[in-house]
Length: 381
Image (cartoon, rainbow, N blue to C red; front, side, top):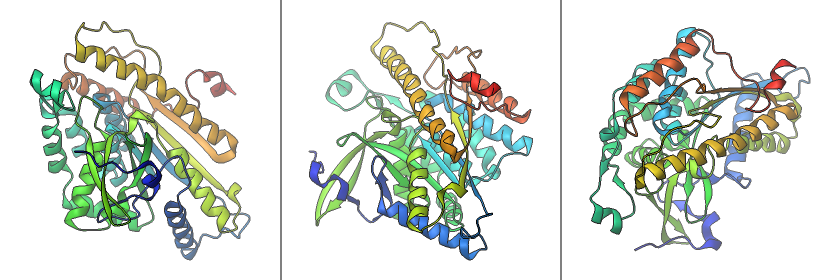
């Protein structure tokens, strides 16, 4: 039976054994602002001074969208970017859904490219979920059983990986993942580096659980539950794919948090700039495809249509942020010339083709789009 957090207590709920590791994306978070202040102080002690009016600080930030199997494109693009020798070390990385998996490897750098490639080119649908019987579907909470995906995450996301995420966190870099609190209908931002830095078995379990929740397509997969505490009472939260709320998520919210921290320190926010790179694991234009007349196919196509349309608004939000003098906008997405011929949800043949496409484009020097779709004229100005 559910024991959901009451509406008036939602903002105060803390994950058992891991306090102060998350925040809602739609409201200022003292936890994150204080964390950013510590980062600024760390940089000042290392020689960077905001009191020097000639000094300008530029943060490289990477946002990776959802897209399920289409994440193979983003994985290929990152590996090709490494091959080109121009891939930055990002100060901030965010990921949602399949982007949460890719984001972990992107945060750790090109030495993990082989594992990233394997994750997105070696497996098929049976390695992600098992179909349920009709009675289990009718009486249960999902179409499928995601135990295969749990096993994959346990295989790739081990203690050694967690140690490396923690080490990068201590250097002052940040990695965030988004999930959707379905009861509250709000996006939750998780500080994955801070969780990794807890350095215990609970941290590893929580890290994997958040990645799983972020990739949990509603109805297709069973929701992921988190035990939380408010005033010594235990409740449970139901979490699903962060893409339910946003596709290219909360990077805007995180960067606003940095600005609040800078203002609170009495510093000049105009000297903080961002080179923002967005990898959209999907299309930005409608793509025709005959939809089979089955319940699962219709649901899959409807979700794909919804997320494609939703992602456009998220891109415009980020683009507007940079146009307000905050820095540089760079966008990559699957070209409309790619024609999907997938025979299953996670089709290994198509995933390898998408990986190869992303790798080829990036290794030859990717031509980043400087504006969202519909504003291409700006690229000529």
